[in-house]
Image 1: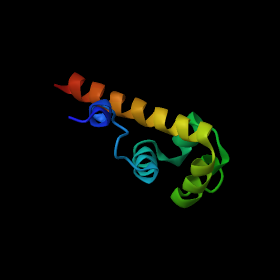
Image 2: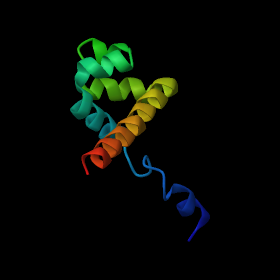
Image 3: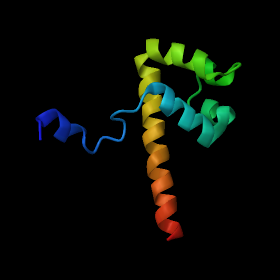
Length: 85
């Protein structure tokens, strides 16, 4: 297996677009909770996927926070599913 594929094999963000991540977060948390967890205007003031994408694509620190929250959400969902078993 090529080295770069080996590194990405266990990366949950690999192959995910920022739009897909944002849609998943919005569906899971809703705009109000998303704005509470990451207090930036694109989530708190007339939020939309398109305006949020514009901001996040230009703002690396905010994108990092969104990606971190997405990873947290995945771990939390996984933990919840294990607890239900």
